[in-house]
Amino acid sequence: MNPTREQMELAAKAAGIKGWWNDALGEYYYKRSGLSRRWLPYDDGNDSQKLQAKLRIDVSWETEFAHAETWHGDHSQLVTFNPAIPDDDLRAMREAIFLVAVEVGRAI
Image (cartoon, rainbow, N blue to C red; front, side, top):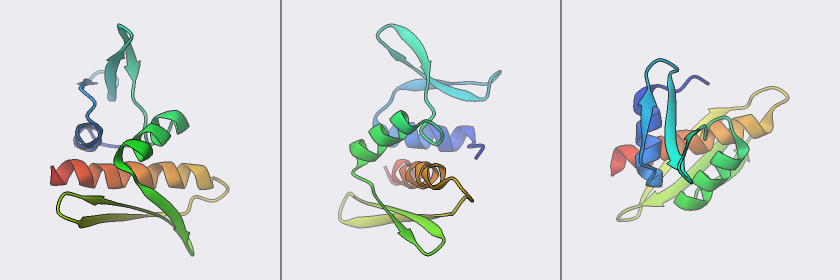
Protein backbone atom coordinates (compact mmCIF):
# COMPACT_ATOMS: atom_id res chain seq x y z
CA MET A 1 0.00 0.00 0.00
CA ASN A 2 1.23 3.46 -0.89
CA PRO A 3 -1.09 5.89 0.88
CA THR A 4 -1.43 9.43 -0.39
CA ARG A 5 -0.68 12.52 1.64
CA GLU A 6 -4.42 13.16 1.91
CA GLN A 7 -5.07 9.67 3.29
CA MET A 8 -2.31 10.00 5.88
CA GLU A 9 -3.53 13.44 6.97
CA LEU A 10 -7.14 12.23 7.25
CA ALA A 11 -6.18 9.16 9.31
CA ALA A 12 -4.00 11.34 11.57
CA LYS A 13 -6.87 13.79 11.98
CA ALA A 14 -9.17 10.94 13.00
CA ALA A 15 -6.63 9.74 15.56
CA GLY A 16 -5.95 13.21 16.92
CA ILE A 17 -2.31 13.07 15.83
CA LYS A 18 -0.74 16.40 15.07
CA GLY A 19 2.13 15.94 12.68
CA TRP A 20 3.39 16.86 9.26
CA TRP A 21 3.95 15.40 5.83
CA ASN A 22 7.53 15.18 4.61
CA ASP A 23 7.35 15.85 0.86
CA ALA A 24 10.90 14.67 0.20
CA LEU A 25 10.31 11.26 1.80
CA GLY A 26 6.59 10.94 1.14
CA GLU A 27 5.96 10.04 4.80
CA TYR A 28 4.00 11.36 7.77
CA TYR A 29 5.83 12.36 10.96
CA TYR A 30 4.88 13.37 14.49
CA LYS A 31 6.75 14.29 17.67
CA ARG A 32 6.94 11.94 20.65
CA SER A 33 9.22 12.56 23.61
CA GLY A 34 10.81 15.41 21.68
CA LEU A 35 11.82 13.16 18.78
CA SER A 36 10.45 13.07 15.24
CA ARG A 37 8.93 9.69 14.43
CA ARG A 38 7.43 8.22 11.30
CA TRP A 39 3.78 7.26 11.59
CA LEU A 40 3.02 4.10 9.61
CA PRO A 41 -0.42 2.82 10.66
CA TYR A 42 -0.87 0.94 7.38
CA ASP A 43 2.44 -0.90 7.77
CA ASP A 44 3.50 -0.94 11.44
CA GLY A 45 1.61 -3.24 13.79
CA ASN A 46 2.08 -0.99 16.83
CA ASP A 47 0.83 2.15 15.04
CA SER A 48 -2.06 0.14 13.60
CA GLN A 49 -3.12 -1.24 16.99
CA LYS A 50 -3.03 2.24 18.54
CA LEU A 51 -5.18 3.56 15.70
CA GLN A 52 -7.59 0.65 16.05
CA ALA A 53 -7.94 1.21 19.80
CA LYS A 54 -8.28 5.00 19.54
CA LEU A 55 -11.10 4.75 16.99
CA ARG A 56 -12.58 1.53 18.39
CA ILE A 57 -12.35 -0.21 15.05
CA ASP A 58 -13.64 -3.76 14.80
CA VAL A 59 -11.86 -6.04 12.35
CA SER A 60 -13.07 -9.37 11.00
CA TRP A 61 -12.80 -11.52 7.91
CA GLU A 62 -15.42 -11.84 5.20
CA THR A 63 -14.43 -14.63 2.81
CA GLU A 64 -11.52 -12.95 1.02
CA PHE A 65 -11.64 -9.51 2.59
CA ALA A 66 -10.46 -7.93 5.82
CA HIS A 67 -13.49 -6.03 7.08
CA ALA A 68 -13.06 -3.02 9.37
CA GLU A 69 -15.81 -0.88 10.85
CA THR A 70 -16.43 1.75 13.47
CA TRP A 71 -19.20 4.09 14.53
CA HIS A 72 -18.78 7.84 14.28
CA GLY A 73 -20.82 10.79 15.37
CA ASP A 74 -24.57 10.27 15.31
CA HIS A 75 -24.35 6.53 14.81
CA SER A 76 -23.05 6.67 11.27
CA GLN A 77 -21.26 3.44 10.49
CA LEU A 78 -18.03 3.62 8.52
CA VAL A 79 -16.97 0.39 6.87
CA THR A 80 -14.17 -0.63 4.57
CA PHE A 81 -13.16 -3.86 2.89
CA ASN A 82 -9.56 -4.58 2.00
CA PRO A 83 -8.76 -7.51 -0.29
CA ALA A 84 -6.89 -10.37 1.31
CA ILE A 85 -3.17 -10.32 0.67
CA PRO A 86 -1.77 -13.79 -0.02
CA ASP A 87 0.21 -15.07 2.95
CA ASP A 88 -0.11 -11.77 4.84
CA ASP A 89 -3.38 -11.56 6.75
CA LEU A 90 -1.94 -9.09 9.25
CA ARG A 91 -1.02 -6.65 6.51
CA ALA A 92 -4.53 -6.86 5.07
CA MET A 93 -5.94 -6.10 8.51
CA ARG A 94 -3.59 -3.14 9.09
CA GLU A 95 -4.56 -1.69 5.74
CA ALA A 96 -8.29 -2.15 6.45
CA ILE A 97 -7.88 -0.36 9.80
CA PHE A 98 -6.04 2.47 8.07
CA LEU A 99 -8.68 2.81 5.34
CA VAL A 100 -11.56 3.06 7.79
CA ALA A 101 -9.58 5.66 9.78
CA VAL A 102 -9.28 7.67 6.57
CA GLU A 103 -13.07 7.63 6.28
CA VAL A 104 -13.45 8.75 9.89
CA GLY A 105 -11.08 11.65 9.18
CA ARG A 106 -13.11 12.54 6.11
CA ALA A 107 -16.31 12.56 8.20
CA ILE A 108 -14.94 14.88 10.90
